[in-house]
Length: 230
Image 1 (cartoon, rainbow, N blue to C red):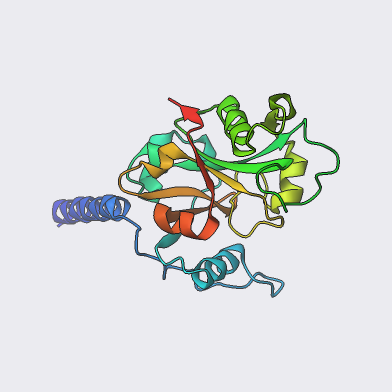
Image 2: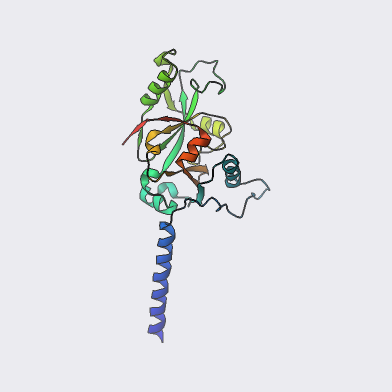
């Protein structure tokens, strides 16, 4: 009897392992109804996921998905992050970073002129190397050369500034539902991804958002700039 039980246990283990692998291999696209049943926090407030879900749906975004990840997610290699998200490739894993123009005039205090601001948020791939010089040249051309090129000096904003402007902490930053209406710059390499569904931060460190590129562009209306290299 014991050998039979042992064999049964091995079969069950193999089946469970296959199920786990199958779940990881399934794409999460068209899974915008996977909002967790818990839409309020312990103090009665709305969860970040519920808030972003509502923002996306109310702005005509239909093809998106949320995924909770373990707390040590950022210690994992990109391949493991790809697998747990069900992303098409590691190139589909992206991040949002806040940039500050250290040479912006002191009188620029709002977002009324998207072409010439102190802050921008850039979405780039984890596999790419961001090139601030190309964004500088883009903004210089966008302003018709009327602003001296030396007045554009883009650098990574301090973390406390990023939190203040976006409302999101490091590794949780997303350009959806930010506190401030910061213009978004989307790296052109993301637009060329196939399939056109990429992942970025979801507003919390352990929450990720996958979204159809075309719908992201229609809603966010970013500047699409070739601003990275391999």
